Image 1 (tube, one colour):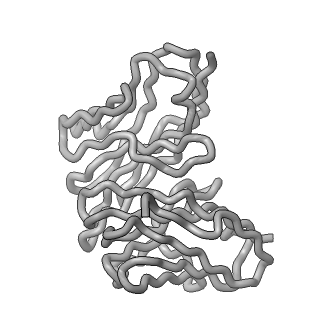
Image 2 (cartoon, rainbow over the protein chains, first blue to last red; image 1 turned 90 degrees about the vertical axis):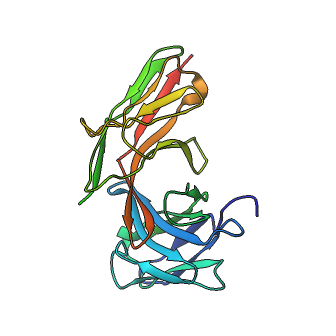
Length: 114
Length: 114
């Protein structure tokens, strides 16, 4: 596609429910990143994929957070048993090659946990 | 660990004023440095970057020079426009396992009045 797309654009859920956030990277981009943008913490790295593998999961805040990437393309970020502190904008980015290549960001998914 | 500190906002200027947004970093090794911009209602976009000491990144009238001796990457523009109103993020790349994990500053909200 023309750019990175994410869905849904907005998600409201109740505390304790599971949510899935989707990212479609730019076609052909092998590297994919998830970040979180929240009022208290700013922009934080969550996880990085190269192809289908995730060599760097160091930013995932707890074991309630997981992500997968299939076919070297679409990625899903899953948050189990959501908490109010999970409320944030979740951003996905992709780049053509890990290294010094520019990361292109999607519009984000705004998650609100009530 | 690596970190980025940038000028706290919000910053309000009149059109055609000179802009400086300060950014300093702490890093091991030799990271690449970036300025990203987030216009209202839009996703993060790369504004400019520099990959080694003394490099100058420039785009849309904005400039920033990679200063290793002062560990700084200040953003400047000689004459701002109303359309420059946005949130600006300074970032560095944190290379680990071949990834270009971005570490962001807290963001500076810029408002330009006509």
